[in-house]
Length: 216
Image 1 (spheres, helix red, strand yellow):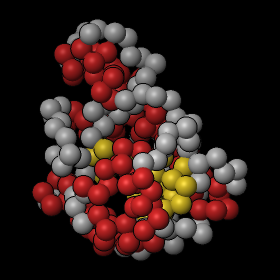
Image 2: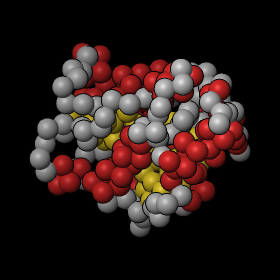
Image 3: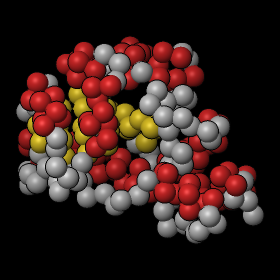
């Protein structure tokens, strides 16, 4: 049975560390596919860049990778903006058992997970891989959630592959660079070169179409 990962986000824009994130997790968990689930209307933030721009930039960035696929299920229903609904619908649509689906998320997601819709049912029923640098401390509140839902901190572990299957959800560090979409948007608006931060085809699309006010 296939094992897949779902990396959710607004991808505004997608950047190289999104790609590196997916590549490292795919190899680490030996996933058959990773779906980049692009948010239409994220519940926790406002996204001003039109969906079609973000979706096109995403496609341009990942189409060279045979195991990476775009996912736009939120277009099917407003309720699918909530992760609990998205994962249920995804499992049913693609006929993949929920134990074979890993939701991939950054550190901020773990810190804010108790604000997500039906977060307790979400953590009880689905598998998560949270990525946080090992030098970043975990708050007492977050530690309580981790203990309650059996989220194991494997940051610093050398044999993560052997440990992963023992636990439902994990916290790991995969040595990503400190790059954010917000930083890239601000650089573009200030006419600062971002070529080193985003995939080349995505960069060309931004320049050609004047996304973020940048047009050549």
